[in-house]
Image 1: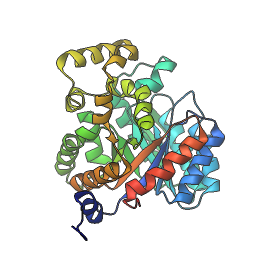
Image 2: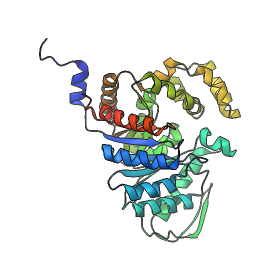
Image 3: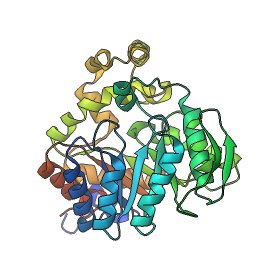
Image 4: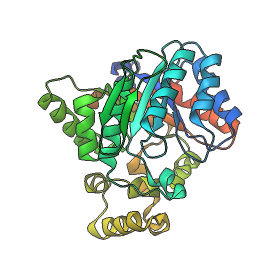
Length: 340
């Protein structure tokens, strides 16, 4: 009928305003990391987060350059408490906060096998490492001299040379203890498995209620796969994601007890090759947003409305600069609902 509005168009028209972010996984030269961040600001992205991948380009060196070449985009890290002492992380973030005129976000996570495995670091007591890292950093950002004893790390008359810092903490995680910590303490939470969003948010909200505080801002991080090539590109990292996921998340993806047992064994032996055969095209589609551009935009709008998302962040992880430019250019109107 002339003048009628399709279900997809109606969903896009009714969608809430949502922020957009790019999550750079620096599997590329440092100059490309900087170039992607600068281009993201030019396109109109609200956030740029850079993953701390250990043996790849250093995030703080890159972010220092990015801070000097941008003016509005919020800058952050996705880091862990294993590979650097939390005091070093606190000082590095304070430095970038100074260089960027207060645009920094501290993205904290428990640390994954993709990062820790090559360094032969055991992923031991991840919740405690994360909690102590956040406690140490936030105390140092008070600007006061801190003596504090944690289970993972400690401070002895430590004082940040940058003075008081107002740095929001976002926590990325999937396990119930980490989500509980986010509900009690974080300013934002980053969720990464599409079919698990509802269950993860339920854990988060209950924790926030118990702590007598508002639920942190909710962000969804994942690829938006509007081409078969983008969908296939996720295959390289999904095995690691599965190895680092709790049973609730694995079940949300439709994996049975046999598959979960294989993943558990792979995590225990740090052998993602055991998981690779489980990563089918069907699993890839269940894990993330996929389809045509219009279908992806409608799904973003639906997720944003159902789960009250503050932002959607997409991965830029290609070793090819032009491919990363294309992804962030084409994904932004999908996130914002402005595709034509």
